[in-house]
Image (cartoon, rainbow over all chains, first blue to last red; front, side, top):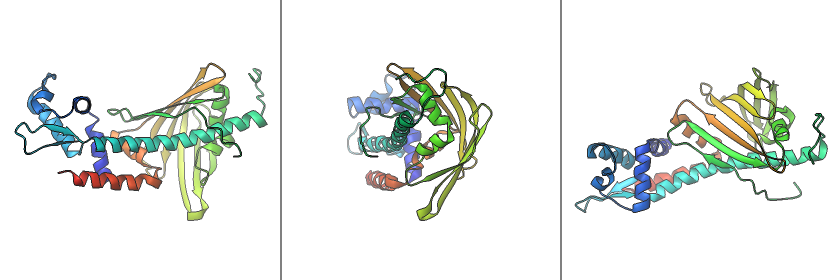
Length: 119
Length: 166
């Protein structure tokens, strides 16, 4: 399961793939040809990138339509964001404790440096 | 704590996607000298570095350039104990701390941590901390560690979501 999540992160470690995801997020579903157009690389190269994104669960491709448009799985992206948010919240808890320590320093300790306290 | 004054200062985090790095920024209602002291004074540091349920026992603490540090985080209720260690590569008074960070859970891994203390108006301070590790995979594991609570359910959710794709 961790592997699956790392795969999603790794898939986004590439700037082209990040750009593809960003464009899908902004413009909605698109064909491989449309997605490849702005890049200075072959359609095959873009297809390869899309395959990595697909394996990571970040995009899917419909089987029915002839163009087989690429669809962004926004929920997976959202979960990744939440995952980072958890890490952030944990750091924030530490820093809140530091806030309390800093406030207590104000009360109980005097700076014994020559500069003195600014307050 | 008797008062619960909500602080406006929020931690910002950036996991630079194509670099094995995590960058965090946080502001504090205290001057850099004071915040710096809370990072280098072992008694102060022990008060905030771990969750309340965890005791931090500092074994070695030589917060100067070329010094080293080591502490054990422990929790009596379930016999949890984990050692953390590293060296102080550079300690620049009230400006910058560069140190290495390792822990027993992954003893071959090492993170390079740089903290900068930037003075802001009104006697405030901005701390920017960057952690650099060997690979993006390790960075992701690092982000996943220390989040025992809640993370499992997050994975399960992700598993379900990924399995549901077809």
